[in-house]
Picture (spheres, rainbow, N blue to C red):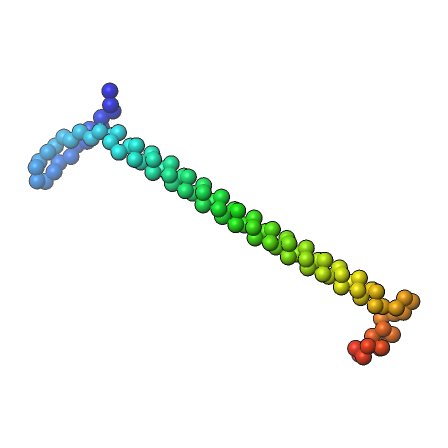
Length: 98
């Protein structure tokens, strides 16, 4: 037995006082639209998070390359400084001293 909702309506043209509305009419469409909206929002969220992961991995790769370049620069500088000398005499020979 379907659930029937009765409302009191009065139309100014026809003067109809009682109108029966079937509450299940169009319910399937509403449910399908809600489910589609849920799936679309989940898909959008997953695409956004995958894009963030790509950016994070790119930043990690760039940071690792920068760290390795800095470490190589430090080792190069340490190899150029003669053993047993200090920075003042080293800079004096390069022309970069105060």
